[in-house]
Image: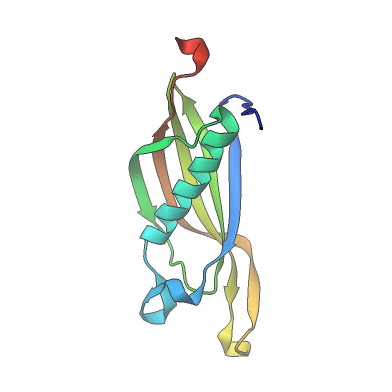
Length: 138
């Protein structure tokens, strides 16, 4: 049996995921993916943050200041980052960012793609998650 290992929630800690956006997730013309795709990705990276910092998956409580700045398309490679900006007794506030780091270039061929340098910031948000009280809070 594995003992939960917590490293502590500290402001500035980041967790980053990368993933390919499959064509099965295209929802609109031009292979656009709906904004909910980015929010789901934020949930995944927030879950890992809570596991790393508190040994628990936590629960999302709220989003604020969600901004869709650029399109996410099927075939993109995205990077999703959560950065801890405030640590309460049971709450963890995070800034989130989805960046497109790779994008298909079909004008050069069906499977052609480019690395985007710098990455394209597609979605940003702030969110709050809650975690159970630690045994030391009792």
